[in-house]
Image (tube, rainbow, N blue to C red; front, side, top):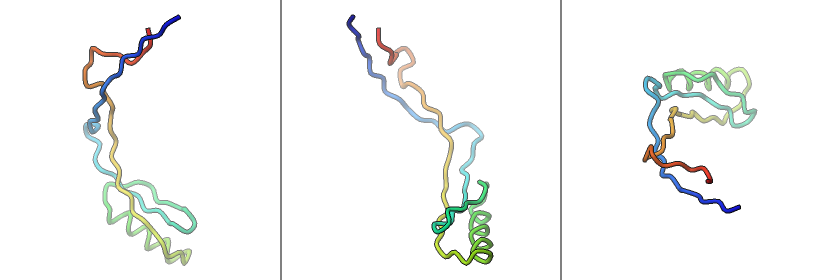
Length: 80
């Protein structure tokens, strides 16, 4: 049996209505906040966690949701 593979170019597009989200993460105990629309809320979580835990290293992460779509909708990536 022979297989033929067709390679497809893909593109990303932001999910409509999905805004950039943020969360705070402790780099010492790996606790993290729930995600929020405001980076200030994620930073506030870090400060509150520092006060409760005495952990001192944090990061605030920003992320956004994307969908992947074939650049050419008529092509496929399945073997024959």
